[in-house]
Amino acid sequence: MAYGIVLLPDRTTSATLISLAATIGTDADPLMLVGAQAPPHVSVLHVDGGKEEDLRYWARNNARDITVKVIGLLFTAVPPGDYYVPEGGYYVGLELVRRPGLDEFHRETLDWAESVGATPLGAVGTDYRPHFTLGMLTRQPSLPDLDTLPSGEFRLTPAIAPLGPYGTFPTLAR
Image (cartoon, rainbow, N blue to C red; front, side, top):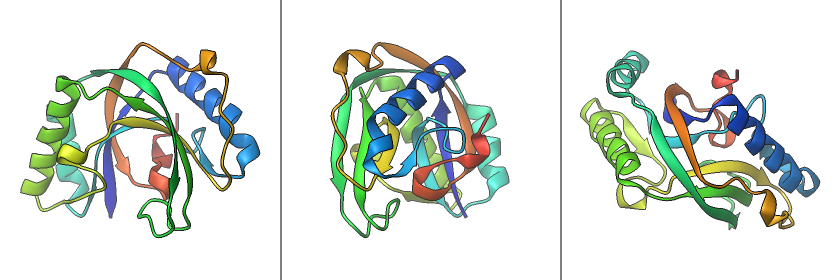
């Protein structure tokens, strides 16, 4: 089974991200938009295998709130055959600055997961790209009013959950 160690924003930030995702993606035939069944999050690490109790034990004993900063909005095409989006589509998300605290937490999580036999999934190590995914779309979206984008810093809280479709975590729905 695949799991993710993720960072969750507070309810107000979540609501802002969900609203932005709807503004950008509703008219672009969404495959997935963040919302009630796909809470906004920043992935620290996705893994396949390992024991859930080992992952939860580590998360409980090593978790710490992390502050992140949005650097910009990214739209990109995802080719068919992608692990998270097999049919391909268009990604839209808010990219984050790679800060030392977040990088350190990612490296520690990666080292620990490998030590217990969990296989890392996706971009890890030097390829780690922290972001809030807002949605995966079938059609190319339109650029939103850039003045409406969230900016500044956000304090996030760690969580762990089974990985759902399109890199979501439905069991974390609040």
